[in-house]
Image (cartoon, rainbow, N blue to C red; front, side, top):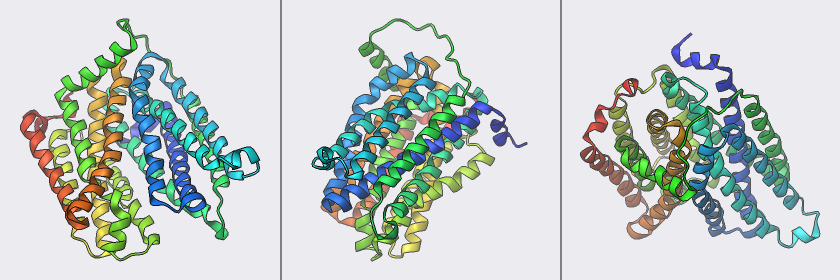
Length: 414
């Protein structure tokens, strides 16, 4: 059996990956359906779609530091199960809101949906802060890079299939079916609960220094900023997303540059995730442990290069391939960054470090979307994409200058 497949002999890891997949699929279907429902059933406004992302992002960021503290203090498996039951409750609320059979709710259903989005943002902060730290406790240290690859693959497959299933089911037979998708969400979240519950896990006894929550959070942030390799890896991902987020302005690019239809946009949006999954198969065969630093820097450079190439595209299928390649190289960055976090973070701090990472990357998605839109308005659509890709490459050069040891990083020796 190949070393990358050896990890599936670990029963706990198999349950973890299945739980990860079903949960990601449910979350992606849920958020896609919320966007479709808000737009088609209530507002027909692009601004309202931006609000759905903002209403999830702000509570997510606000709760992230506290979620990291909780993930380091209590049983991580139990935190995930509680979070999933809370997401089941959110799907139940969305189902009830969408049936339009309760007069009291029907009058405020639009606002009630946004209230649920806020709850989802808070819950996902605890889920995100706990997932990677739990995974680190289920496999041996030498399997961290392989586990990060399969974890990323499960996430990307869920991210591809979730929106496709939701969009197909929502408009099936010419009418809207949000409540049916929310019912499916309930089943999928419960499947996630089942697989995580099957994990035989007991939190190891860790002798921690007693400290208050604020002090504990400060320790987590200081740790990230003192670890140059970890900070460099997070910064590379942050700025790549911030400047190179071409996906945010895809609707405008598809219409004005590619002259394609809104239906064509759906496939184009999945291109980065498809590329990530294809790259994951390569990483399964050859995990990026040796020469990890060079691979990380090179992957972010290539992400920037293919973002620039996308900006010059006038052909739909060439644009699709360029976006697919950005996703492929971005996945190398994700796997190496996750491996660095697992290998260089003490177990008693993994929750807080994961939360800091979530704040950095999560906020860069939303703020990067604003940057892309602002740059497009300031300099034009195509120049803004090219500028973003170019700035991504500049960031690599700056981090390489500030931390020259990065290119010598070998995770097989950490």
